[in-house]
Amino acid sequence: MRILMISDTYFPRVSGVASSIRSFRTGLARLGHEVDLLIPAYGPREMLDTGILQATAWRVFFYPEERLMTPLGLMRLHRRLRQRRYDLVHIQTPFVAHSYGTYLAHRLRIPAVLSYHTYFEAYMGHYYPWIPAPLRRGLIHRISRRQCHAVAGVIVPSGAMAEILWSYGVNTPLQVIPTGIEAAPFASGDGAAFRANLSIGPERRVLLYAGRIAPEKNIPLLLDVVERLRAALPEVLLLLAGDGPARPALEAQSAQRGLSGAVRFLGYLDRESTLRDAYQAAELFVFPSQTETQGMVLLEALAAGLPVVAIPALGAADLLAARQGSRSARPDPDDFSEQCLRILRDPELRGRLAVEARELARRWSQEAMSQRLIHFYATLIGDVPISDLRVQQPSA
Image 1 (cartoon, rainbow, N blue to C red):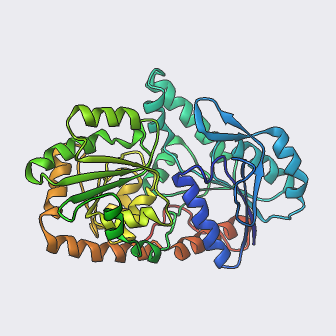
Image 2 (spheres, rainbow, N blue to C red):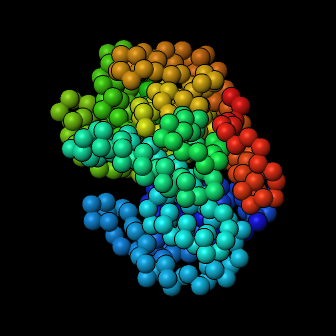
Image 3 (cartoon, helix red, strand yellow):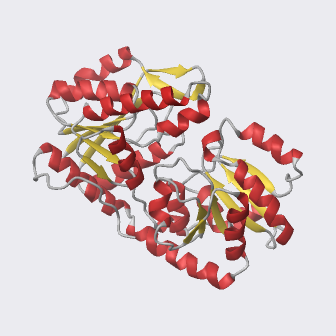
């Protein structure tokens, strides 16, 4: 099968969407399928994998990390894309990629599929609080319905996200297909070297967060948790791997609260090297976000054998439901810190959770999820009959 994926974002812009695209492209290629990717140009010297096409793009004024593909850039690639004889267009984001993807699919008379990655209703509240809540909800509902009804099928990464789209009135065939993971590489990090490079002594009890440092990630909760843990574990250290618009304010808040010795901001870590080392250097992965439609870093931490404490909201709930390798916490600092303390104080429990974590991650493998994705493609193309396309999740 020959597939064209289109996205408004990709590496070097670090995001869950970019990680999902790369995982599925790799998995589909290993199954013998050909997947091209159309993305904005991030710069003329970017090293690109085979099959990645860049359209000239504008910078987004308020979001310097983002790009928007230009009409002229897409026009320059249009004839080449039409000649590729794709079987299906897979749209990954709802902006220029959606508009052009549906247009191209219509011209080629092939199905278009949409991945609905982001819970925009929650994000709008963080970034545009001045818009009245009913207006925000109504706008998101209408746009989501229109975009989902413009394609032949919709993919969501979690059961919770499927329920949300159904509540919006979406009736397009829909499948829950989380992003899979290659588990083995995340068990290969060098935690001792990572600690040595950052002068973290063996006595420090290290908690790790990885992801965007942004308002919707609820990171202030972790500062509250560290304050509480220090009373019982003075040597506790929280590492924040990532970057984003909330970092300056959180660094200032950490200093004002006297937490500078207990909290370190590391910036983005390379997922292929230093982030894997960080997973091995930590004793516990902490994730306070309530807006994740999946949360790839949770799966990466589990694959590394790192026990997880997280809030069972949206996509995180699917991974936490089995209580394998993880513990759920309420979104308040007392309960969250209590769950962390139980694991940190009990080496036997921590060891058991590490074994469970790796077992669970293997069931969310890249190969298994890619096979489910290609089966969904085939139903939309007509190669196999459509049966029941409602929620289907990896067994926990």
